[in-house]
Image (cartoon, rainbow, N blue to C red):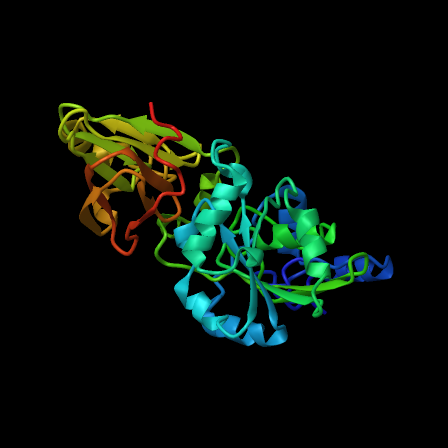
Length: 368
């Protein structure tokens, strides 16, 4: 017997292991004909608390095995963290599959950016037909009814969902099925094993799989509790900067420092677009150097607790960006150039390399 929420095998002997449920509770649930959830899922569903965190390896090898279960693949990507959640290594695994790309969390994108602009940008990034891209918000069920009609029109009615942690796979499937069966939470790695369920209303079967754990997003440096506090809930926040005469330092949280040069008049204009939870702070470079360690994990969030600079290994990259370009900070947001050229030096933890890309945001959208 498997837990209906996370897919792990139910057991009653070891409270510290996945799938645990007290024997008397299990017997009562079975006698009443109710669905069985492990203690961890029950705590997440009803109290929003993570009673146990299991470091299971949600690996690419495991995903490759799951991919044999169905030929139709729903690859869920977080539009907020596109660079951190669209993975070339996953794309290679599904090369011979029938893949549909579900771009989740579009409700976070500022209203000035239209759905057609988002879809065109995603199509250019993925290099696939527009018909294979669906824009969604599992949170408010935007795009769900249209996706259901689309999927019901397919000959094969069985679909497997894949993606990295915290893209909202279980939320999407619950919305598609019109149920609250799968356990969803703001903690990464909620789904532990593949979970399959059938929607009788729509005649579709879905398989939810554990999120692939990444190691190169800034969020990956945080524990699961801290990661849950960083996730955006509202429209992404836009911070506009215009360094004119002197170099200015902008902190994006405590782990990313951006030193922006003033350039030649009239000077650059750029935006930092991030979760409302993340501290974005502008200061002098001298003040930044003097205060960084005392601000790390206190005034500057994330991290969620006070830390030392030597707790991390750092590297810097100097970039020259032009109007309409962006540089994405995986897990945190991105920097958009409204007027270039912009010369910046980004200091960040190693293995969290910023990614330069063509802008999702047009150069005139937020220009002030």
